Amino acid sequence: MAGTSISTSKEPSSLRLTEFEVIAGSEQHALDLAACSALRRAVFIDEQGVPEALEWDGLDPVARHFLALESAPASESVALGTARMRIVDGHAKAERVAVRKDARTRGVGRFLMLAIEAHARRQGLPTVVLHAQVSAIPFYERLGYRAHGEVFPSAGIDHREMTKPLA
Figure (cartoon, rainbow, N blue to C red):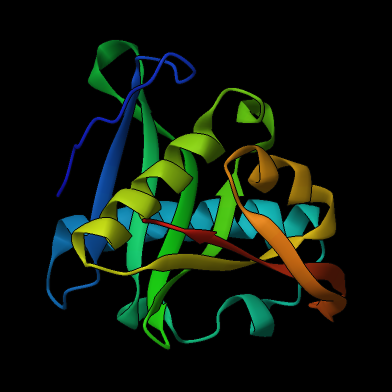
């Protein structure tokens, strides 16, 4: 579903979404995955200090990937954010949600989460679950997610589990 547009009044109209699964031999998917990986490296490894061995967990080939792009002059697109989704225990699990530092507060994270929720609904999944960094909990709460359980460390960063029913 490349080039899908999702828009609400809060997202810049220049955002577009590329949604894909990794398929061997697909040059476009390789380019899209490289853009996702570059964003994740910048946010998680470089900015937050997550060890590479934890970030590259081997699950990318079994996940659905979402890449938020902003159209720029001269028909170039700029990758602003990425996320991935896997089906775990019959629920959608949102993972690796990363937005470029200079693009935060522009609706990119919301855009990505709405895309994950839409895909999960199309798959007939009842709930989206995620492990949110504690500092990001207010962002997810504004999208209707609820935190539960104790705070736990992951990659040296405190997290809490959050869920959102899709019904």
